[in-house]
Image (cartoon, rainbow over all chains, first blue to last red; front, top):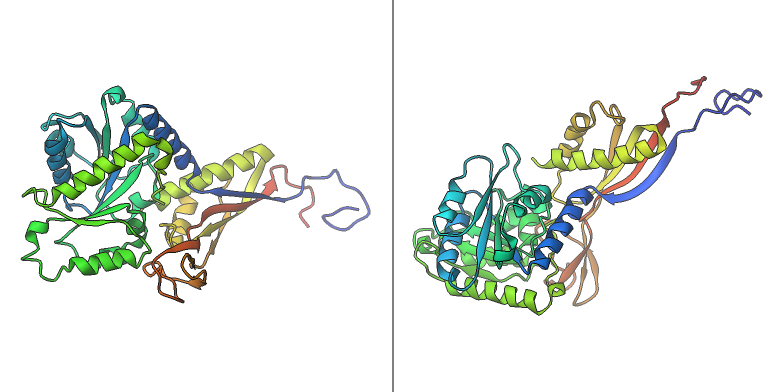
Length: 247
Length: 121
């Protein structure tokens, strides 16, 4: 019987509407490229750190201080993400390490494709530690896995100590939280580091919370120790680095 | 606003389903959790733009918003949580695992055959 009008004539059957079950992540394409990036990095024994924060929290300053402290010990490279300008990459190159600038135009985050392209422009055989400085933004970068091994989120003491509560997706993804501009703590009396840490714990996140001042070189040692530990964990067996997705 | 990027990924998956069946898309069902990092309203606003001039143009987007629940690794309780309070509601422990609320999934696609039936009823 005709399914359209119920008459007894069997019309030439048009195909029926159908529902297809899919059950796939909306970011699967990005996640596949991120996994490819991670495999690429692992093959070259490179550990990649995704640095995220609000604009102006001190990511580039932290990198400058880190490069100065480690450049005789580790071969470092940096991928810089910004909407415009190569100012940050020039600051890094002035320290004597390779830096690739990705200008995202209007895009508010880096994605795995952009990082993949940048990886092809770097001398991967001559790198031990790769920093990916994400676009300054506490929202969008959290959703995109880049192929990094660890996520580090910076919170400067000139911001509110309730940022982890306001941006839970970002701070939940952090495997290390760094409270930066600690030299300003005496002036920023309304910023309570214990309250910031409490807000991270409320996200069921056990990540260490460090305090440092890149400008004065205060508190760098625990950060450098964390980096060395992360690298040696990687070299003991790449599998130990889960490369937890930011999402 | 990264919802447009996310939406473009969604449309790419939807179109590959439509293409394999040689059909037009009439409705798309997604599931979005409060911890996914994606704002359902912005995803819905991006959808008509991301789907324009494709086999999904004019289709409807149905967003299912999931609830946020955690399982306590200390006492085993499963409780409701909020995005910035993911502790166990039973014993207050910090060691919990999110069991629902991370979702960012394409669930299913409703398709219309491209050759429209002779009778539309």
